[in-house]
Structures are given as structure tokens and as C-alpha cells.
Image (cartoon, rainbow, N blue to C red; front, top):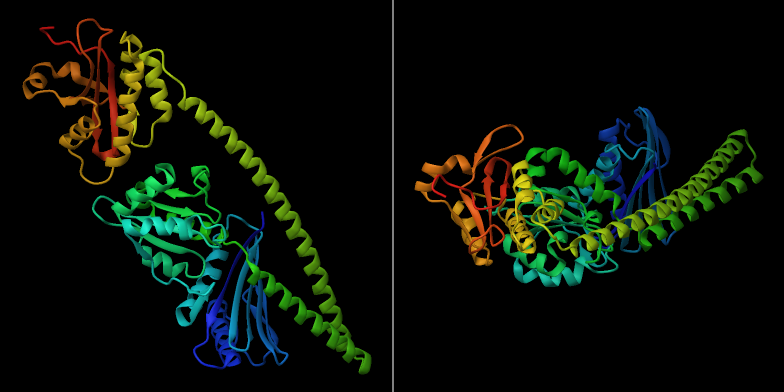
Length: 495
């Protein structure tokens, strides 16, 4: 499927000469592409040069009020066809930049790298603004006192045009992805913010945990963000993803951010100026051909007409593509709404047995809670009369797994956190584990026996319908809480 990437913003002039700055920006852009595509030095203001296996056209136009520089470049590499356009225009001291890349291969990451690299280089060398505010070249540090204003003023702002990228710190106040390097790479395309742990907690309170970013993770918030959005609409990478495959994840973040930029009025102005220049060229060629007809002028006119025809065909194809994207988005929204309704129904479900409580908890669990077969087996045998309390205790374990998966986790932390939330938890004594540890070992899917002295206590009194025990362990290598038993009090040789 064809893809389109665009960025537009205003360049702040460093002197009073707009055309002089235009020429400087144009020269910088041509030099940037020349180095990367083996273009020869420009000998004229207008010309067509070979560029590897593609072609590039560069020219300037000046009507006294507006000066325009345009660079068009098309290339085919392997099975991928793509085209780049750069336009810089000035009216007095007002300088506008529009850069765009199109490709017919949605899986190619090369096009976004070239376009983003060009824009980032220009932003670094020139003073650039968007909507009157300077473009970010370094990530902003967000503290807990900044979060409410950021949510109101940027995150939920209806007219936000670029994605907002949140980079959170882990329990040791570190970020796996470097937010400043990411912002430098995406200058003019996305705004990057670094959240410390306290800021992440406040963000979770304001937009709900499922839409937040914490624990060393990275999230992209698309333009048009709403607290009611499905969490999957705003891509999220866990700390474990970044740790295992950081280079690949950074490419995914850059590629997805490049596709989320919302075209604004600057894009409309860009196309209007481009069309006006083409119409003026066509009119001039026709006048020249009428006064001094020559075969070369006729050929030039024919080439221009053919280019205009192709441009119209491309515009129609683009219209059909956006129509297809809109229809696809509608279908996706309907599917997401169905999924949300299904999740709401599941959340209202009340378990009638302990086995059903474990099944519901397993369906709702996050990445840091898991159940062994022995947990399901013991739950199936349990006659405990309050299965809803079992579900509440397992839900508390799930939340703790999400909160404590970063950094060093101790038994004392887990026990204290559960007890603070009115879930009675303790660890078996050393003497009990020495004498009766076999009853508190459970086999995982690889056949390994895992010792589980930690347990949650539910109920009291005599009779298996009056009390229940949940035995679990924190597996540091997998950053998971593993549940091995949900059922009766484990017997000892004396009981």
C-alpha cells in the first residue's frame, strides 16, 4: 500500500533577507541529497541530473513577491518505488519548508530515514518554528507538577498535528531509549518528552494506567488522542522490548511517528504554490512556442503536459487510497468497539466457583502474572465458598506484578504491598519449609520444581469451604509472579 510522509514548519530568518535565506536552505538541501545520492554539483538553477538509479529535478522561481525552490527526486530500488519532494518558499521574511516522501511499499523503512534525516539536518542548522513556537531539538523533562498542563495543553489538544512520544524511566531512574537522541532524529516530526517515575504515576491517574507510560517503556500518542481511545491505537513498547531489541524498536518508533503527522494548512499552501508555478511555466512555454515555434520547445511542452497528466493520475490514485484508508479505519473502529463491549461484559462477570475465578484472572492477567497447571487443578478441587475474594486477591497480584517488574524485588516488598492493600500475605517459616517443603514445590511447564513459601491467606475457621491458600513465587529472570496453588491449606505430616 502506498505510504506518504510529510512535515511542514516555519524557518525563522536570521537576517532581513528572505531570498538570501531561501538560497542558503536550497543549497543546504541540494548538498545533503548530493552527498547521499551521488548528484553532481549544480551548474544551473534548473536541470535534471542522474541520481543513482533515479532522477532528480531542481529549479527556482521568483515572481518578485514569492521566491520558490523545489527539489523533486524519484528513484526505484529493487521492488520499491519512491519519490521525495522538498519545497522552500519565501514571502518577504516569511520562509516556509515542506518536505514529503511517498513510497509504494509500506514495509520499507528507507524512505522515512531519508526524509527524516533531511528535515532533522535543516532543523539543526536553522532556527525553525511551528505555530509560532520553536521546534524541539532536545527532549523536554517532565516532572509530576508538569503533567496536568501537558495533558491539557498538548496531549488532548484537538488540533495537535504531530505525535507526542513519552519515554519513561525505570525503577533506577534510567531510560533504555535516549530521549534526546530520539528528539534530534525526529525534530519537526514528533515531540519527545522524558517522564520520571513520579510524573508517570500522575499520568496514570489522569489518563488511566492502560493509556499511561511507565517503568522504562516508550509510547507514541497519535494526534487526536482521547482518554476513551483503545490502548492499541497508541503504540507501546515495554522496557523488556527495548532491552532485547533496541535498534529494531527505535526504527519502528521513527517509522510509525513519521506516518502520524497530520497535514495542515501549510501542506495546502505548498500544493497551491506548486500548481501556480507549473501553470506559469506551462503558459510561458505556450507563448514561446506560439512566437518562436521550435521542435525543442514543442518537446518541452509535451513533456510538461505528460507530467501534468501523470500528476492528475497520481492525485486520483491518492484520493482512492485515502478513501480505502478511511473505509479500513471505519471497519477497524467497529471491531475495536466490539472488543471493548466484550471486555466490559467480561469485567462484570462474577465467578461462581474458585476454578472460574482462576480462569477469569488468567484471561485478564498482564505480562507479569502466570499460572501453573497445578493452580488450575487445585482450584478445580477447592470448595471455598467465596470465589469473588479469590478473584480480588489474584487481581491484586496482577497489579503488583505490573508495578514491581522493574528493578530488584524482595519478598518483603511483595508481602508488605499486599498487606497494605488488605490482602493478608506471609511467607512460610524456615522450620516449616525445612520439614514440609515437598508440599510447597510445584512443577512448571519445563518440568522444573519451583519452591513457593509465599502465600495469601483467605478466610478462617474449620472446613474447606471456610478458608483457602494461594501459593506463588516471584521469578526474577522472567520478571513474573508465578501462581502454583489456589485451594485448600497444604497438608503437613502433622495435619
